[in-house]
Image (cartoon, rainbow, N blue to C red; front, side, top):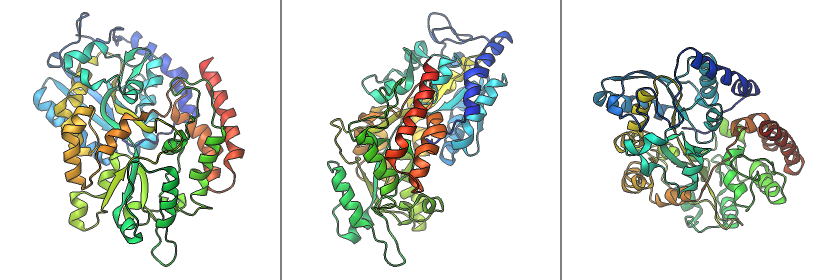
Length: 464
């Protein structure tokens, strides 16, 4: 799924107050809560109910971009053939980047929550904090999903567990790295980048690839224009925006290294360096990597099909490309973004049936269906290496799939806490910093102190 949800102040008020009331109302109306061990109605206290024992009809609120919709249909059909006693009604949301979480919050506040919901790795925690999600610890082993929860990988541990309990059922492992157009490098006579390149080398290469004369403009790098999609650049300095990425208490954007980097990636790339197109141009579809108007772009595995696919090759519209790790900076651990995405069970009387479908999707058969349909990385490193890598290389025609694995192993989660990242972005970081930076009306040194002050107020209120 994409990673651009927006959570307004009104929506957070719902989460802060109404959702707690809704949970109490559900209990009062006779919808039993799952016990602390994570078993729902029908499960024995000593362990999880087997999926085959589950029955009933459940509502699944599912992320709804084109690739996911096709995956839900395929997964539901395969599940129904093996589990005739469970019916899954899938509801997707138009424009999920804007509408998904508001729809979920409205359903919960209205006393009609889905039994199962999609979640990004940094957005479900506030629902667990409000006691709205069913923990799944005692179900994992019985469903054969122990390998999914690899505690040695920080990006998995941080995005599936809250206060010692598991909640998220991962359907994919996600990371981001650098895509590059081979034709752009060939035309410029520049060697392709390698996994050991540096930030300084990236800047020089981007300048050499930029060609702004004539009718066929090409920029060296297509900037993403969002804080959460600039996180690698920020963390590559060896600094981070908060004192802790899990339950932060102090906002610290206004550090010299971060100020310098944000100034470059959110403004100078577009204006003084001229290596990136303006965001207004990108929004119209101009000067993008998939149209040949940019040579490099920072993206995840969901982008593979935008570059090269059997359909694009049949239409002669493919971009010959490959990927590399993001450039190395001052940070010795060379962090990349990394997280899990998937589904979580909402507490209520249908936890067992919801678990039956969730565990099927997270199992190997379901993962093969999901990965084949979406192109995304499955939920274990073993399945990525043995199944996804050869399939993805064949389908999307690129070579360096190992870079995705290495990027994920180095993964840092964005930020997780009582103030969701979506609220930080929509209420503070975007309007206070990124909007004026991207339109050239302010400098990072002016706006990042304001970001810290506003975020600190949110953190103090939430942590009080």
